[in-house]
Image (cartoon, rainbow, N blue to C red; front, side):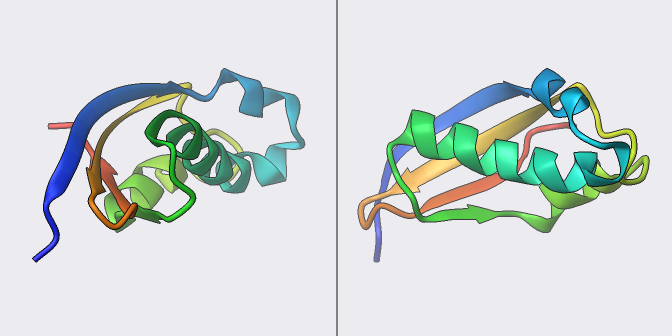
Length: 87
């Protein structure tokens, strides 16, 4: 069984995504979430829960949210699992 090393809740800003073409914003925001978690959790093995993707695509590709709240859990083997922390 793999033990948890670190569990953290992050509020990830997605304001920089606004400077991309409208039709790419939601797709680029998924990549921004992965990059943020890779930088802060020090791992390249990031698994996103479908709830995060659903939240980012909720208003379509043109208008993703300005920020998203995410619960990230890092395991011993270096894998990071992220899920939406919105209640």
